[in-house]
Length: 331
Ligand code: GDP
Image (cartoon, rainbow, N blue to C red; front, side, top):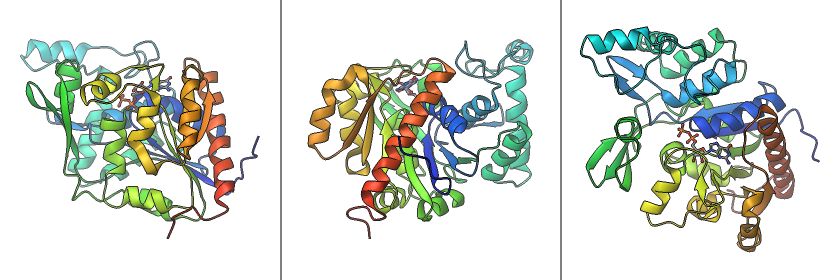
């Protein structure tokens, strides 16, 4: 076991549900000085005049312990009076807004309209919810995921929530990605000599992680960083734990395997974490030069999250020792 060196920092990249499970585990192993979570905002959308950031909300609710664990999204002890009243007024109810959750969207929208950046709003919301670990939106600019489907181009929430991921995916468009600037703290961290590892959570590669790593300059900075890049597979035993990742992979013509996720990330990765059910993929992946950790990656309990997080940190830092301060190919 590699001892975690307190002056090294872990940068975690996250979507919503899968990424936040690992981020919660990491927040139990690392201090706020040792961990930053950068979160996808390409799922954000405007609804009923409100700015909704589903992945940031999932991270905030999970790290504050306010999340609903049985439903798997939103806040615990939620009530739905506002949604019922909206229905009576003939407003759309396909996106379920709980009363307490609504307060987050009202506060965020109000602060954004008053001129705050999404970063500043997120920092304020996190402080109010007692979250000590930094959570950063990937950008303060607007990037939006659109799914090119057999039934036309759909905004992400239309595809994900309204149409329940039913239409066949032909491709994904990230509108605004070319001009969006990566969040400033994110950029600084990538350049920091104290960066110990970059951990890509077990999130959807296409709609949760791609928007982050396709921001201008990010993939190149990750490749040339002295810190190793390690991803945790969201695919276990040929299927996604939740959500459309496996369906999307199949529809995009990729084999639905953990190995296929590693191939998709390609030379961005130095290490890959796969489930023990996928142990057969380990050697072929190692033969490509990738370091591979095989452990249980299904996070059902808090202890599962903590254990996996500790293993991922140890594995990542063991790779940074291998680089001895300079990654092969780094400038
Ligand atoms: P979303 O934005 O809410 O869809 O969340 P993410 O993109 O962060 O996560 C979705 C992915 O998380 C899916 O592909 C799931 O397979 C994966 N996932 C969810 N729970 C787990 C888990 O316990 N272990 C692993 N390895 N993957 C998980």
